[in-house]
Length: 319
Image (spheres, rainbow, N blue to C red):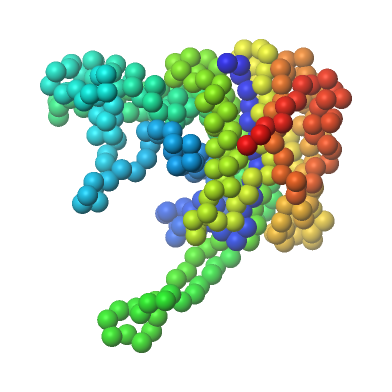
């Protein structure tokens, strides 16, 4: 496993890519720049849901409820992994330290999201004997930001049902959306931390699959309208080396009078010149650049062709 960096771009059209629950669930906006913000937690949720639903991979962080609708808490979820040879082990037969070791072993074996993202898992033998398992995830993402200023739209409409018993008026619904937002995420894969969570290259391949196809499969009413546009993974020869903040080495240029008028990825060009320049500068440290491009995104340069001319090995991802 080598150190690598991820650059991921996707867009959202007439939807809410990440609502803020403390602000009427509006799309998150940086008031200083007018750029749309998406949390790393939202991105990881996209990956987790895809891997669980479409790849049938076990994940630790998911909502599980009983027949009465009571949602399982984290400590009881951890106890789902108190297993030996596939059989449940009673807490009374184990010390707290033994519980922690057994849960951690099974979590790292079974749960891809723990191997990728780590986590803090509470462990409780009794009300007086409590502890936790802390695992630093090798995959870390910064908050995502749009590459341009965005506009918020407030939409109000009527529902299909009455507002109450014996009422002639229908209910109202209201929501905030962004007409368009091209969002960039930057991430790092730490080869040192991967040794502690037992993450493999197969796990990383599934992570990239989850980024691309997980975004394509956000088809609930509140999330439909999102499309992956560019995925780049830069893999290095050297341990403990990476360029850093690849998202700051690209720029979305548009001829629209105002950035807020952009409505599609084809309304502008992604300037990758600074990125190419930096990759050329550090090419001796680069083992490979893996990439996936959507056909509708306009790049200032043919990225794979330019990288090959620089002598940097490239590989197109197939998802």
